[in-house]
Image 1 (cartoon, each protein chain N blue to C red):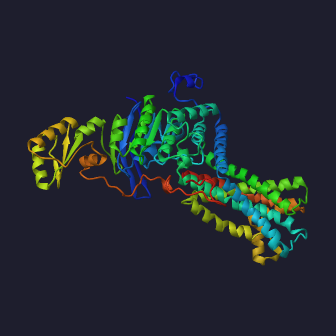
Image 2: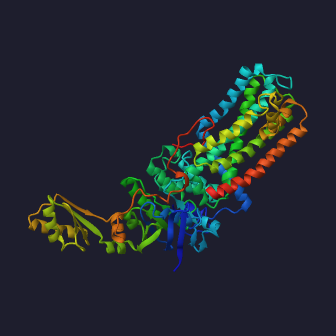
Image 3: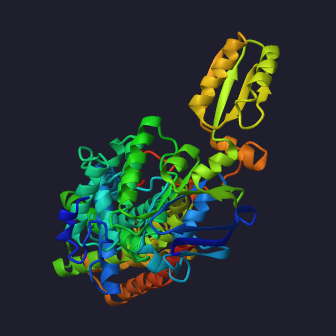
Length: 343
Length: 280
């Protein structure tokens, strides 16, 4: 078996105290999409930064197509493409200029860069916006451009770090289609995400990361099966009714239902048929639900199932690149101020 | 991405998905090409923010007018000639010195925005980010020196020692500006953000620019300050530029100025490179 990406016991500590990676290991087969799934601060971005040669690990090793990311960093850089969650594109340049620049810095000939820019702008639905500066782009367009610039040199291995975080549902769907088309070409992709749905849709294999460690790994179907693929949430008028309804609905679920006040959460196998069965049972007992929702498990459910606790949000984030990259953007200033000020 | 458009570019690639082969070329050749790419990017950015170019010349122009018409009447230049001829060397050097702050601000901002991090994952020459930035700032300084020369002429400045000597003075100014850019690159890469880079740079420059022979003869200064003003880099470069533009014995002054430029480069280039490796 050949692996395009190998991470072996990667360790990284920031500032002496923040343990971003605590021995992360995984391997990505050539030509597949591998999803690193985890909440903010789990260490996903740190793993990507190490594997793309941006930072060195404190311990362990990483290899891309057999090349060590530390001792053969130069070689690795010529094989990879990276699109980051902090869309690191120059907002004073046009979309075309951005792709052209990344192409040139990948040492492609000018005419190849120019042609690739046109091609990629078209493929990512940015043809009309290609000659406008990025300041005029929406958040979704910036992400698309970031994504368009990554494969400019047709890298063998692509790293996509939370490509859709913070996007609305529609932009996310667009982006998913574009990522899928990238993968069709046989490129190996390492994708990090906070969304189980995204990993499920795009990745053939998922590693769930928490506190700098891989806590579960497997095919999405396998992971979901372990968790109870789908949840049926039923709300009832009062707590007493809910308690009795939970008892009679237990036969529908793969695991016993949990009751929280007036609502019941029931893990089920085959969503639609379980839903019909549940409705029949409720109807037979003359019970009318106030709400009735079929829902895919969220990352939160995965974590609850794997660790017994909810994901922590708002905790310190060792994933954040230095100096608040990509966020606190300042307005352009006059005078001796910045030539590259953004909006 | 269709195979038909790509087969021309990649003769060896049977499908449209094979990695694009980099152009051939030596390591040094690519370092130069990468520098050029970064210079081009920085210069495009300058043209996208015309306010920046405009205001980077407004301050020097105001200083020309201030000293030519407000303070100038009260200052007797030691050379005895017209004050405006004495003044311009100081204005040139002051302008490029303050202008070098933008090297710090630009780098701090690229760092802050994560652009340098993205560059780090590309197979480009490491050095190109810094050489590209400082070279782009050199281009901007050429523009600024041109504008100031024009303004100087408009208010009565005349070249006293001939065009070749004047151009030699410009070369000294630009070399000094380039060396200063490297110094401020270190500050830009040390600052937590671009705003801080700017406020860090100012107090370093202020005493060097004003405790110098930029606007007044050092003979009017108290002894201890006179020594500092005469021998600190901006003072030395102003004296060299002034003797080249106004006339006078140039050899020692120019030699000392070149020595300072070389010294600054020898110290700050490795420091900036080290800081870049550490931060980006």
